[in-house]
Length: 357
Image 1 (cartoon, rainbow, N blue to C red):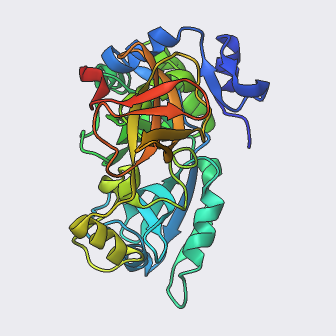
Image 2: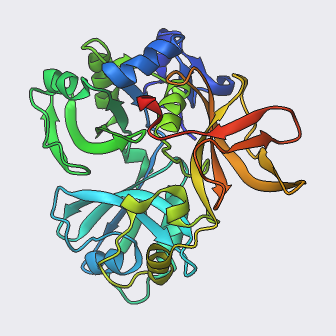
């Protein structure tokens, strides 16, 4: 992994980095302030470690429509959507945000480190189609901003804000160079993704940070996303998970016709039958909970393993720790309590959305 082009700014500002590797920003030192900015003002996140796959060629549109969960045919240039690549059993193999950049060209923004795998996975389904795949992660250096005032901050810097329709984007000329500005969900809430060349992104970050947006890191990001039950690839989602288990209903179509895994996804939607679902649970202490901790519940005098923790964060809304965990069906009612692992601590399913409590 290469260093973020924003690393000089992070270092000057005294940010705490994960493992001193300069790759993941934890916090600038004021997690409560960063969290509040993500709700009531505007917070900036360094997402320059995301990857990007370009799909182009005379058959690119038909190819992507045929194999991915996306309704690609309906997209116009300048529009996009969340998408998935499933396997034949309907389980998630890849997650991405798709943007139609031309009549036969698409950019797929991926979670960190996933672009090479997505290229390989797509290539498996190529036969005689006129389609070119390329990993262009080195040209994809996005930053994201969210909060109730994020749009006004962006407008004050760029002069205007692009149309605020989800996954719609505009390529704009800024004082620092070409930018792509996209309306995307950021930690489960409508926000903005800005993408450009390294010098452009650094200059934009610095300008936004002096124009009302507060730089933030992983700790505040997790606080915000866990309260919104917003799953991450490689954390809450992997290739053993069905989309509906991870609350990814917005990333697949039930009307466009056949694609890989479509029959399974449609059957789950029609008949139900999910064995588990990602749920938020209140922890009875503030200490971090280890990922992979099992949830146990006593039934008829026997302790049963009924779930597993995938994420932990502190919830400022509830003033305690909160975990995301896959909880088995018939045990998902609000107020249901489980034992955490082998210890005395407990977790309790809470009502959603958490911030309204």
